[in-house]
Length: 386
Ligand SMILES: [Zn+2]
Picture 1 (cartoon, protein in one colour):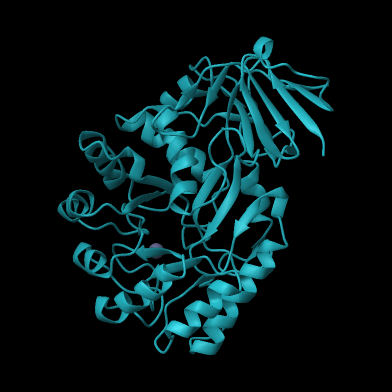
Picture 2: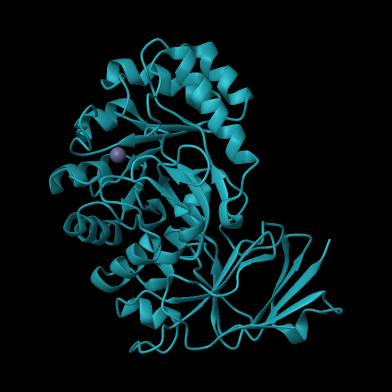
């Protein structure tokens, strides 16, 4: 397995919200995993296969899109586009979490078909890396008639997630809560649509319904796209310890108000970031970077904290061994800098000024999958591969 040295790093954002910035200027990768982080002079580097001179840019963990409505392959029937996942990798995303394959034309709603779709999507995405990125696919939509045994079977076949509760026929807490218990017992992570009805056929979900159902994640606390009222947001922040997702295709005003509330209540470790696309809003290749820039420029969240929300926080909620720059974890990384023409002098100050940073390089498991983003503005400084 090959070794990679990243040197001359200007800033390392850890992905760990309890210590967002790491000291040091170098990262060593061995066999796709992060081996060491620190100052190059102290790391005992022995002739790596690949050296990337980062030219004083910023290195972050690969970003997560915590809310992606994949179906199969890199195609969305919702907006009839191919390559939307690969396009998002050019916006720094290296892990996509399915929120439910709800856009499959003719999606079956009986237990056998529902189960089959979740298992097929989980197994298909386990073998398929669009643009090099990892997709956690196969998020089962809760439909009436699913049994405890069905959840055990799905978990054994690789289904890790319950897609947004509220998209299927199981809508009320009385119906959903028992299934949530079965899913949790199998180690699944559970998402729940929150807020107004998204598309015809889905339903409006209130804070009270979320509290009674007890999922793991309040999906789009800022609406997908219609948000709950601010006092409902307050209930979800203060009366639960659930993960709080903020999405691009939601309500920007409630996002900022919810973010400031989380700062006040010391709950930044609960925020995760998603696109909620493909959806009626479209596909948004730079959505995760844009939410990071929105939070860091319009709320009191710092840019490095916003990056941790889209990396380590999401990885923790979904129990994935990446999203933090630390020894032994998967080496999914983004190299970024201020975009040309920004008032910011580096990636973090550009983000704080509200600009989307320039993505210079993306690595997955230590392999370069993007060497120049076709979607962000060009970065001022560019890493060089030796
Ligand atoms: Zn939703």
